[in-house]
Image (cartoon, rainbow over all chains, first blue to last red; front, side, top):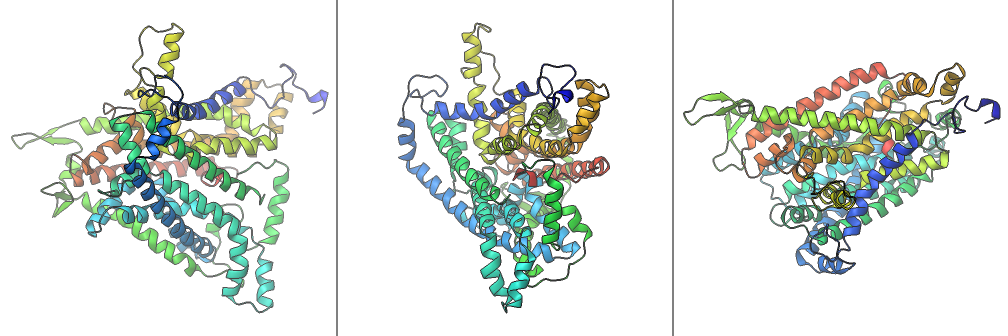
Length: 270
Length: 340
């Protein structure tokens, strides 16, 4: 920017800046992150009362990791998340491909169904699925939770896969077909490898969304299907100790690491 | 995620269009207008989407249908499930309660909760707009490298557990939590202010839960805005406030609309913030629904409340769609896609 176009009044800041916006932005960023930092910080508190600081300790992590109920909840969460991820990614790849070739009406229907879990109030989906399973006489527990998770993991798996698919140069397909490749060979040898980063990113996002879900799991857990967030909710309701913070910190850490990977994968393309 | 500069977009778009004529480039909007495209080898068939559609039909559509059916049935004897006889009592229960004598009297309990939910969601949306406009515009005016990083930073909380984010405020707003602690330490207050388990705590939790949903769509609009227009306005003698009010805010209005939708609707159906922070005194619709499928054991009434929540959400969605179509001058802001 040359001197001539500098702001007529103002203090040497750019014309694009508005007063107080920087301060508000910093405050908003602090508002977004400070609460999480408090959760993490108090997980090292040696006092049983979370918010009264006594001293630094790792004991709560050992305490939590050695707890049988928590281990079971973690196992349940992982079983749900892994299966929900694999199935939702497979369905999302099919949907991404199918959407391109669908007629207008089909596409509308498909987008409606894909978007519904994002727009609908989660509580309605949760109790609706509960009612469906009770009506079908299907037992509650890990399989029920998994089925429900697949539904709302699909949109998150779909976004990066679809973005990747739309970036594929059709000339590559044509070249392959000219050289005698069948549809299946093209899919396996060209589409899938080119989609791979999108598929991995979609899988990572689906995995976190499933791992972090509370409400749907809460209604579908039944007696043996307690997942980690459902367990944490119980701890918050009953007795809050820094153990809740230790568990929360670990769950936060997993989410942040995974989303960072997903982000790096989708960013490289641009 | 979108950290591209304003100038590179035109070129970028043209290039992609040439390379991928059949792929719909911009957003779903151009998808709709197009008929079935001629097949290119290797593109696959629409049948690939069938398993996904069938699955979602069973696990998204069927639950909604069942909820609607349940809302017209009677309560089961032991509370779990329903009795299969037609009954509109669940809807009457929204406004009337049955007295011991068997007569019905107007009872505003649930109406009050529904109005509360509206009120909380409205305040949440307004607070989110006020906080988001400055940061979104600020983000959009940073150098390209910053912008990408900032979008990511704002996105991260969305990908962390809502339960934990809500729990964070149980700690923070606690009587001996950090806020009360520091205020007492500074001598501003003598005894702790009871912030937890109040409507205030619920709204703070709701704002915190949904703030990224407001920032990202507004940012997406602001990022498309050509700030040379603002510079031109300064040249013509406008001051900063005028530029903000007359140039910038109208340009980011589509983002504000999209963000309001993405904040208001989930806020209206919120369960965790009122449950953990409101402490039972400030129930919202979702808490009442959850109670009907839990301790209260009145599934048809819970279903009727769910139908009400669904209908309200749909009406808001349609209203926003109509307003947004009018307000949309540039490309549509596909807010969900702006999340990643």
